[in-house]
Structures are given as structure tokens and as C-alpha cells.
Image (cartoon, rainbow, N blue to C red; front, side):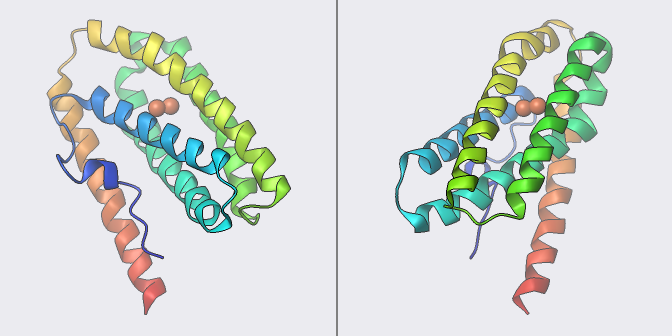
Length: 167
Ligand SMILES: [Fe+2]
Ligand SMILES: [Fe+2]
């Protein structure tokens, strides 16, 4: 199965001068995927959407934890620390889901829990953290360049890994 968790980026690429918009685009895309997963009865759709959600969330969490959060930590340390805790909670659920079969009742249940937790987190980022970052007067393009480079390195690493699986 050929899955590109970054397909929502492929048209315009990473918006270097507006890195917050890139994060919001991830949020919107994962919201769509959760919607797709939780509203279908079609096993094939669930089997595709489930792993895709996990893959997108993992890349997004890596991007935030490795580049974005450290860059904005000083703006509001307790808010960013709290966001990281929420990532850890989501990662625990994601780890469990990876070992489960998409479409089973257990998986469906945990997917709903993950959705609720992620959507709560996303709302807090978009309503509390991002506005503070926007107002902090930092060089957004510099941050965007770093985020773009990190994301590109993840995509390359992932492409290499899936090449290996294919051969
Ligand atoms: Fe986050
Ligand atoms: Fe986020």
C-alpha cells in the first residue's frame, strides 16, 4: 500500500514563511482522516485510514517536539510542557493501536479516544499556543526553514524505509 502522509502538502509544498499554517494544515488533514475512520463501516477504508492517521500524527508530533516546541518553549514554558505531556498520552495510545487490527471493536474504541485527545490538544494549540507564538515577534521564516528541512528529512527517511520493505 502506497501511503503518503504528506499528500496534503504536495500541491504547494511547505509554507516556509507561515510555519503555523503548515501545522494547522496537518491538524485539518488528521481531523478529516479521523472523520473518515469513525463514520465508515467499510473495512477497507478503516484499514487504510487507521494506519494513515498514526503515520501522520507521528510525523506531526516529531516535527513539533524536535523543532517547533524547542523553538517556542521560552514564549510560554508551562504551555509547551503541557503540550508535550499531551503528546506523550497520544503516543501511548498510538503505540497500542499499532499492535492492533484496524476495524476491530477494540481498535475503533481506542481510535475514538485518540481522536478526542488529539482534537482537544489541537484546539489548545490553535487557540492558545499559536496566537502567542504569532505575537512573540520571532522570525517565522527562520523557524519555517528549520521545520521544512526537518520534515523533508523525515520524508526521505520514510521513503528509504518503504523502499526496503518493497524489495
Ligand atoms: Fe502538538
Ligand atoms: Fe499540532
